[in-house]
Structure formats: structure tokens, C-alpha cells
Image (cartoon, rainbow, N blue to C red; front, side, top):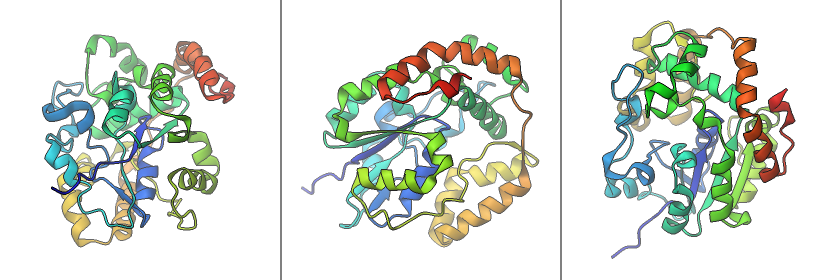
Length: 303
């Protein structure tokens, strides 16, 4: 029997921290095979799929694309060529799912792990903007949405605004499960400030050619309030994207999507100062612990 082609790269999070951009860049590299969908989620949820509701009790959009069988999961990597020695996926649920770090180590012992971290205050607001844009958050106030989080129980992960930004324990679990040369912890701030240097660091870690550079200006997984929810639904629809990928060249498809989102998405109101201060206080201890774990001065996140 042929040997299974198992992924050996997991970009595990954090949600709304640049994982879509990095996965998109890597998907255009000839030495890398990235899964489509970007977040198959199978190793976290198994055959049960993604049963989590949005704020109105409906099944979340991820239900449409999370993979629900091991056979389908392996099929995501079955067509990888001999040149594509990096087989990757980028399910951000893997960072926060209990026991996931050791599960990935057991499943793919030689795997490489990438974690991208973002200021948790900004991450939470970005998640809310995304949730509003996708129609999974019915509350029109970010502050009120934060207050509703606890009573919602276990909703769609996009609505877990506080929890998804508490990184320290999750990072520690990956540090304990994987050797240092198999774990790369990156920061969204660096990705924005110097994408070329960020990319070169990733390529060195993955042992792929860093001279093959992606279109850094391309925007992925954008957030905002859609003028037309119908158009936004079409642009984000997994099954339609899967079909179009087969008939439209990749870069042309990305360009068309960018132009349509430029027209359709408008910015939501900025976070108010009081909410920002409350979130900074909420995350303070976790950020300080994370700073010690990573050796990175994260004081700017608390200012």
C-alpha cells in the first residue's frame, strides 16, 4: 500500500493574525502544497465536523468547508508533487484546542509548527469586524458583543473574542510538545512592518527557496461591513471558490476578488477608548507571561 501523504506543516494560529496571508503566500510556492480549504480542521474536530452556532443559533459558515472524514483530509495532499516537500494546512482552531499540540506531535512527529501572534486587543476587534461582515455576529456593538460572550457558551470560534487572544498557555503547550527547531513563533506586527523579512524567515525555517517571493500587497481575509451581503456571501462561498479555482488562474482570481471587496466592504467604527482600556487590563497578565515565554518585549501591546 502507498504511504500516506501526511501534512508536515501546521500554521496553527492565532485567528485574525495573518495566517490567511501566510497560507496564501505559501500556496504560490512551487515547493509547498497547502490545503484547500485553508482550514480543514479535521485533526481538531474529526468526523463530527464543525457544529458550533453563530450568534443567531445557525450553523457557522465553517460548517461548509471543515473536512469530516480522514479520507477527505488525506485527499487534500494526495496530488502533491515530488518537488512539494512541504505539505501544509492552517487551521487556527489548533492553537486553542486542548491537547492539540501533543496530538499533532503524535500524528506527524517531524512536523513544523508556525504560530503568528497579534496584539490580542486588536485581534478581538478584527474578529468582531469579520464576524459582522460574515453575518455571524448580530450585535452591532463591539462592547456589547464582548459582554455577551460568556452567556453564549461555546459558539462559533470567531465569536470567542476574549478566549482566542489568551495565547500564553497555548504557546507553552506547543513549546512543550515540539523541539525549538520545529516551532516558529512570529508576530503580526513584523509581517506588516517588513513582509519580505518575515517571508525570508519562514522560508529559512521550512527550507524552501526564499528568492521566490509572493505578492506582498495582496490582502487576505479582509474584514468590514458589506454593502451587499449577497455579494460578500458569493465571494466567501467555499464551494464556489473551489469551482472557480479550476477555471480561473489563481492570481487573476485574487485580483478580481480584491477589486470587488474594495467596492463592497466599508470600515466599521473604531474601537472606543474605554473598551480598549478594559481589554488591555484583561490581557495584561497573559501578555506578560507570553513575553517571558517568547523572549519578546510586548509592552507596546499594553500601551
